Amino acid sequence: MEIERINDSTVKFFITYKDIESRGFDRDEIWYNRERGEELFFEMMNEANDREDFELEGPLWIQVHALEKGLEIVVTRGQISDGNVKLEIPVTQEDGDGQGQESSMMTEDDFLEESLEIVIGFADFEDIIDLSHNFFIDDINNTLVHFEGTYYLHVVFNDETYSEDEQDDMLSQMLEYGYESDLSIYRIMEYGKVIIDSNALTVVREQFPKRA
Image (cartoon, rainbow, N blue to C red; front, side):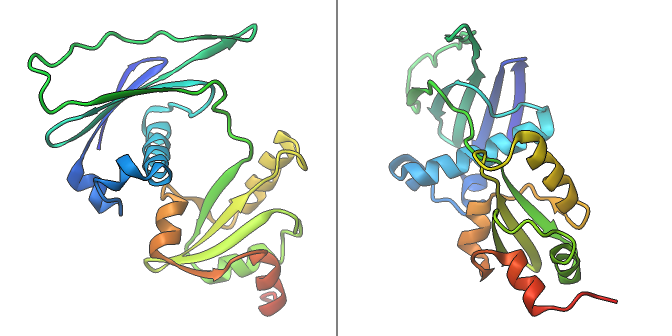
């Protein structure tokens, strides 16, 4: 996938259909299955955040062009001031004959994440055991999944229970035992094996003794 930073508020993607399929998506379902289309979009935005420091926050203007070999997607991040949304949308040149292109536009009035989600990968299962015996906050949603030889913990924090600073503190504690993964949780859940579907750290703590 190619990512081009246009300016501070706009990023452009080009992803081939082959790349889309290698990520576990069907080239047709991303158009007809909204949930799958959103999964692919979030996966691409996570990569943009890692490679271009382009965060997924605030209202977004999204333009999609279906080309012969793949998709070109332009994402512009808006700014909210006094309740008004300001978008500086770049002008794009239309294809001369208009063939092979389709476009759509979606504007979100409030595209803010309601809760913090993260996928944590672990080099060894023993690291998960160590985490479970050193992290005793049991009212956060966490699922343990095994995918392609690696264990992943999907963690969801509830904004109504913990402040942003508290969530950051808990996340820092957890990342002492693992690393933040770039993989989409949707891909891991679809192609991996769920080991513990809820309260994973509590179950691990109860089933595996603390190492001496």
